[in-house]
Length: 200
Image (tube, rainbow, N blue to C red; front, side, top):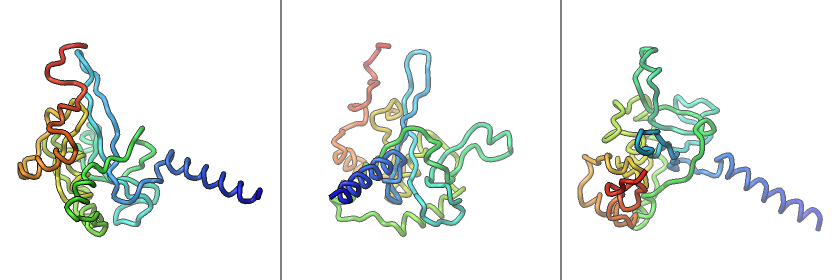
């Protein structure tokens, strides 16, 4: 009986550790990181996105790298590099995060499955080949949804950025379908900073 209790406790602690350290994610999962920029009147909020790759062996990925994302820093320019690009990084260095596969329900309803070979192919296609970072039309969420689903969209729901992102290469019919699936006629309805809010 003691052995059984010990096994149960060990499995329980292991499951907690998996969640805390992010290993509970599956290959290809989209991960969201809440971010905030301090502005004079009120904070500007947005989400950074990455795709979880875990310990999967992929071309150009180092052993300790477990996410793929479009990222960059102004310091890159000083080194003569591009401002931003799609690269592999470490989840542990990115701060608080959560699973955000928000198009999975739509995929399931349409009878589609997450295409793991397709994800690997799109990662290889986009590695250091994302084009210039443009917050409105080519941001980290556009890249993450493209890698996971093969569909390049960004909604930034629940953030200030929801008002400024565009999906220029997706049909209006598909955008409407996604919003209905998300149960959000517009992202602004769930945004904490509505256009009519003058407080703060």
